[in-house]
Image 1 (tube, helix red, strand yellow):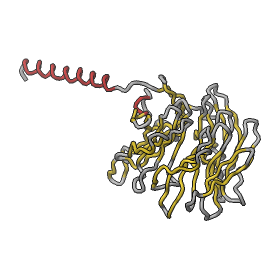
Image 2: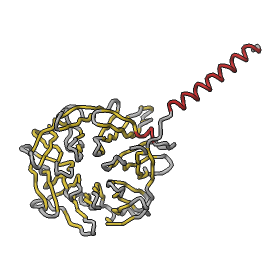
Image 3: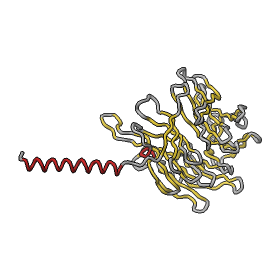
Image 4: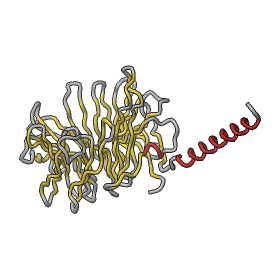
Length: 358
């Protein structure tokens, strides 16, 4: 190689290095969130379920002996062990409000669902269904009202509203075959799904003053999600009877509007909604299949605001080694409760993800 060619080659390499460095700096996502990992709290796995507006977290800590502990944790690293369940019991859902009241659902060794309500003073009561039956709680508001559904063995689901004063109120099936309540805001507006005919489901809004209003068709009501905030803004899986990988929003003025779809993903669920009409989606990428193995499959969390896509949250955490983000809930200010898979731990880690700039 001549001296001239060698000089040209060196210059080309230098240009490529400089260009690569510039591209890396330009494309590097801005850090928009502060990540705080929750401690193990004496268990082998921590499953976070709910976060309130003061940043307190309701979680399930699983012990090495397969017991499950319901705990309340706050930012001062104070932990309260509220209840424990022996091996064979599974706490499948917890909700927490700003009064530190907790509602939960448990699956027992006999494959029976039951739910409870725990007041801030420690008093606990069961959510008993009319005439007996299994009860699954779905949401709790700041007034201590709980919604979900109950059913007798192999019977239809009935949406319910519960509070300490009136007990359980059966909301019926809205002239359909069965119904499920998914969420309730502080104005006692309830959203959920009811089955009108066979496998055809419809999303509904039940307003204490205006009655029931249909929001749109849904392919899989029992597995779909629907959330409502204190502004009456709704985000969920409705608007199509054929596609489950999409999201629609609803407002009183504009009605339903379809805003997003999975786009190459095999899972999509609304997993949180704050009072600024920002909502969070969990999605799962299929990856690629090679020699009977699934490669590059991953969970991602996405932020939308009304009908506008904002960002993939994973890209703005400023932490190396995070392989996936799975949102478990959010409070009214948009602080996120999540499970983060890092690859350095056998189980995903519970974490709080706080916006640096609100």
